[in-house]
Image (cartoon, rainbow, N blue to C red; front, side, top):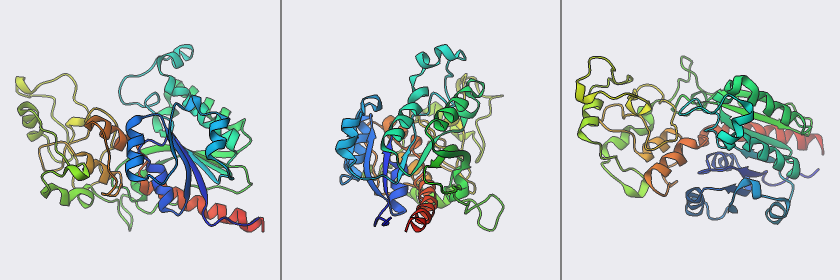
Length: 347
């Protein structure tokens, strides 16, 4: 079988495009990309107008639409179904499986991914999600996902990877389901960094240190939030690499909940996980403010010319939800080796 000039991918639940950007950096061609969010659509139009993108509900993505956009054999299907229903951050959903979908329908979006996998039949697939789905509903969701993948006929496996082990300056554990239908033994990408090895984890300072001197730059999403006086006083009490002390606070600084927004990063360590939310990024290592969207994007390994659009909280969600492009590139390079092996065998 003749090897294509570029391997081709389709990206579902593409969000701001972290997965496809990493695969593109690894030399792939993106044939089709889709998401339902209007601001994610604007991100794609602004940054990658050459890539066919369709904004729509995944449930409505039928065979006629797929056939219109996908006219050739696909090498890899990638995607990350929205994960908040599985996440350990924020409100939890009902423990009753009969009420699960009613409480948060995002918990079944993986079935839409598998429905499209079954239709377009790519050689390989990669699906990303939060580590929390391993234990949610006492493991029932995880078992359901494995069972549904097993019914596809694809050989598959899953693994939890820490993005910091691949050069991303951030502790970010995510689960990846990966597999193929062409008889190639798949392995996850080999880590390139480690906490105490010869190539140590990248740090917050290496990613964003230079931006501390840039007061504001709307063109690259580097706009600091204007914090209230009380929050600034709280930030001043947070040590580098620590969190706001909950005891012995002056009464005017006390509040019930202290989440990720009251943790300060350490300049010489990787960041905490960038999470989606309403401006919910952690505190800068040495400035008394939360990270800007650009600083968070740097920590996620997006290039500075990749611009996020919409209200600030939407930009935060675009960045926080994304697969770090550097980690996606590592997956792309690994799968590329396995695709090369497949085409070598079919000569």
